Length: 346
Ligand code: ATP
Ligand code: MG
Ligand code: FE
Picture 1: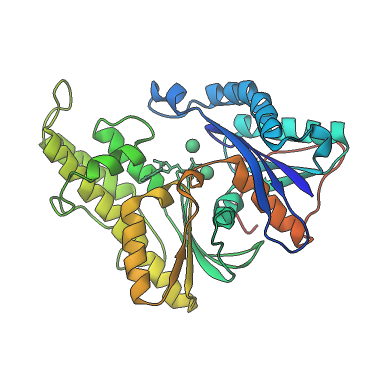
Picture 2: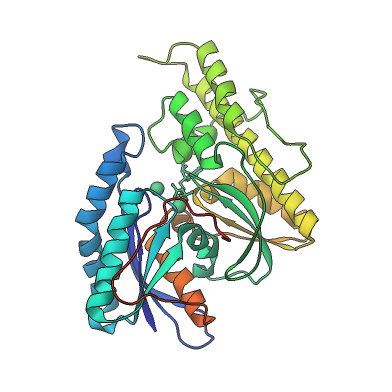
């Protein structure tokens, strides 16, 4: 079966084609992605209305690109998958509208997919996919959760953030340091030149004994330091000071993520960790998880670097894994809804 997948939950338009046959691992045939980052940068964050309009502009050209890369026609598609939520309502509606209309026109089923399930299953797009069961650390721009995953569709929440997500902590701290949106990767790059021990920043809930997170206090602490190191106009605080603060911020976030992941692994007794979501691209997080887990005989799986953030491939892959397991209740006939707020596992 050939599955065409659409992602449009936030500021990336993604389209991809995945092929699934029997029990063999599903295969990514082609994908195309457009990031709206440069468009939103001027506003310091995602502007929902602009996001929706840009999805409208991009989704069909990207679809044509995927088909031409695959050497296929629309008529060769057997099923259409799309992100139903969570995300921005207007942005979701674009992808869902196109997907469901296309499915109706081609007379094939449409399959709604949970965006976080897409992130979570994105390591299945890599050369070395994980085996079930595993603990999943989902660290994205909007979510920070630890889950026990026993199978596709079986997600038990072990703990999550009580306020900001890890990606949000990266982005807000980066903004305070004068870095462009989304600041996570910029802060990470700057941190390479800094001393992670220069500033003693808080690691909230580090010793709570539960796999829960809190990052809101961190940005307040960063703000306090930014104020101390001086005005950020014109020349701004000197680069080394900024790099030290960036490195210390990154270290604080990573310390918490590593400690809580180990806690979840101990609690569940599982020997496998899957990291997913944009923050999963962070080099320090990967290094520290790899070394902590190696000591404990735990295997860690990541998505490919470029598939950590939003993309269509993860949505088509999640659909393919569901199809393979006979877990689909595809829709036919046009009606659809999006779910801007939607808990994974519900
Ligand atoms: P959600 O999936 O929860 O709805 P989202 O789709 O916006 O949120 P992702 O696309 O998975 O989130 O990830 C984007 C986030 O990842 C941003 O906060 C970004 O700053 C962060 N990020 C990306 N690369 C890095 C990196 N190398 N280091 C730290 N953070 C990073
Ligand atoms: Mg994004
Ligand atoms: Fe996402």
